[in-house]
Length: 266
Ligand code: A3P
Image (cartoon, rainbow, N blue to C red; front, side, top):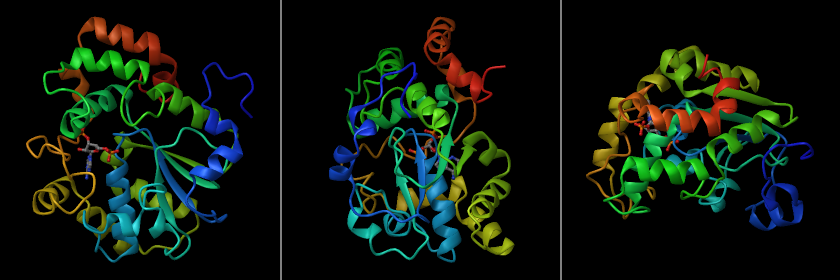
């Protein structure tokens, strides 16, 4: 499974015994994992699904109860009705039966990750985007989940069935259609009206207001700089405001193959 790959595979991905120590509980064949590199729009996807399955009652105070993170909210996972939707940022592992792999243009991910790192205090406030981008390109960012292209390639190269590839940019273009695709792909009945209202309940502006109201209620916001919003811009192509020609060239040298296979470079 990991033979002939061009990049270094982390030890936990290869060794089931190591993974079993990490995992919170047993997995079921109908579990659905929402996997992505950080800053690819995973919270939005969780809100969309959380709203669809809870009659639009998802917010920052209960998102972890509706669509938990497999590590952070491990206790919650065992209490969920099946099929369970759970979130993870893991590099490819063969244990996830059914996966939505969410991707976003790595250049927009880098910009979003820069502000995330400032907000979290993971880098000094004086760090420039240029300095951060060098760390990002080497995968030297927190959380440590390899480089963006390693992560993407690991899931795209995997021979696992039941992976639905979702793009942030497609979600922006047709949120309803992409959410519908998720439920259809896994054969989960969901009324059209429910999908429409879940899309409305998960709109950027609504989540932005919720972030302001619930700044102390979501673990990801606690002890972070409130002057740097989580709901930042939610745009496609924001990277153009940040990258110099030189930085773009370096980025393409390093991540070009992954950008190309996802259609981000023509
Ligand atoms: P930006 O920093 O570019 O604004 P994650 O949840 O994986 O950490 O991703 C965070 C990114 O998703 C942020 O991107 C955030 O603004 C964006 N996002 C969150 N909710 C969104 C929504 N409802 N619509 C569009 N983008 C959203």
